[in-house]
Amino acid sequence: MSEAQSITGEQSIARELTAFQTNILTILAKEPMYGLAIKRELEEYYGTEVNHGRLYPNLDELVELGLVEKSELDKRTNQYSLTDDGYDAVLDGVRWTLSKVVTGDDRADEIRDIVDESY
Image (cartoon, rainbow, N blue to C red; front, side, top):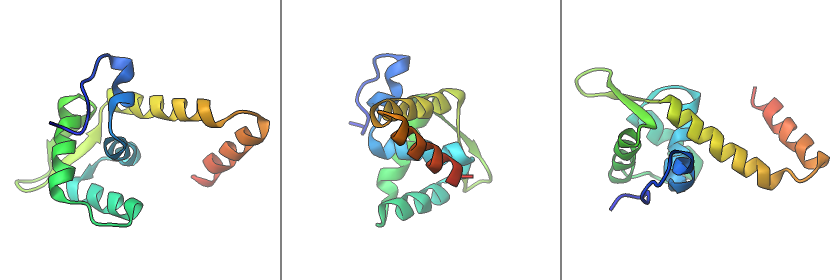
């Protein structure tokens, strides 16, 4: 069985994904990437090696769910990019997280500072 549980509705897609799959979507929100570049980004985040046997089945599942598009860069290399639904899934996760974290003006200011630092 895959890492994600069954998807019951379009709005819940982001909420049914594993953290690993959500991290893949977040990485792809920046720009389209090939598999090894995604792997490197994940390894940097986790601070440990990410196994191909974990990465590629999850990428394939995200493609099947319509959240990621897979295209061929050359005979050996695939490129992955977010679809509009994938981007919406990322935003849904961010909105939910912010709805729990931002509980007042001070916390809202902290989030604004984080956003400003990201540019």
